[in-house]
Image 1 (cartoon, chains in turn green, brown):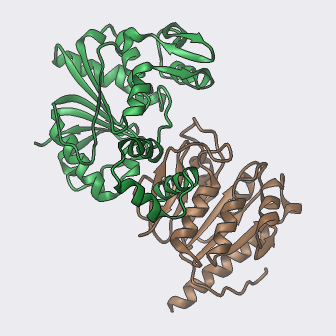
Image 2 (cartoon, chains in turn purple, red):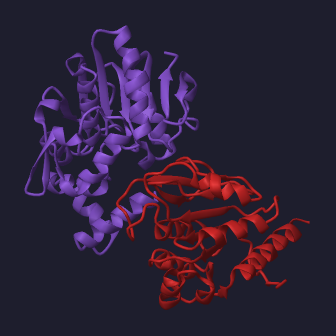
Image 3 (cartoon, chains in turn brown, blue):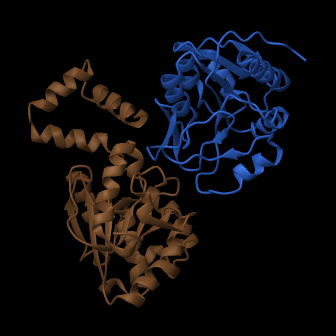
Length: 247
Length: 201
């Protein structure tokens, strides 16, 4: 709620609303354009490539090899993909494993404007120093610079990485399961939800996962306060990787 | 030893620090009794991409084991908490933590201002804010928020600080109840703990 309050406050200042009621009133008029702007402002879209490098090492060395040893093709869902840094990171890992063709990747977000950015996969060069450092710590086998072209202060990512990624609008809170996955990543998204929303979203993930498949959340998120936590087992507590063990 | 008259029952103590605060906080934590009751919530500037080592280093001296809380973790009596690397730590109504990955504030994540402001909103007058040595202005707005909600504000005496930018920035923008050196901060916390224990009897 503190984060939500801050973002509401920011919108009030940005659009010069005198009160929260004025904002509500404007929202209730049903102006789609304003609603989308509101959505972009209210959601947090701060992310980086290979955030928590040790998580990516675990994926590369354990989780993905296991999934590919059991299945010819695997499906991955990035839930709340924001501007797509995590999707690009995943595609790079898969390509370096020689498995990119064998993965079906779906990336969703509530905000259509940020999905557009994710599809463009163009990032400020300012962020690339950190991204490169993360990539190296995450045991990338190449140079990150091989995957992008620098142009006017932007890093234009190699589009072939994400050419088969399905980007689509999806609301985690009101939306339902739409497919089954071997791996769901939802890192640092549910921290913006209260406990009852978290319970609800975890049910959607539970429904979206095959039995014995994986759910990854942020390093300081925990499922233990969620209602259906007992349907998951901790695979790696440090990197917050869970396995669905019960239907 | 200095005695402080404590007027309020406090639900939590928030401590912020940056450059030059590690030794100070380490000393404070080492002097508090193992049954210190009021939860202490710390936000100390740290490397954003180093998840490990900091809490372990603080724990060497601390009489109570410090934890980096998870999102939605309840705040408990008798516990010490440290804001984890690369997250903002917020206090929520209903005595829980919430983490966020929002933009850097004052070039920091975790930012002291965000933690102090959220704690001030949740605990109002029943909060103590302590701001230690540091080289930027993070925490000053947070101290102002604590004061405005009726909480108690304490800064490390600038002359006692390795780098006094942080407490000085707070002193410049908001009334501060106590300006104390490290030993007095420890005595203040011990007085506060005695009050808590007396009230229980």
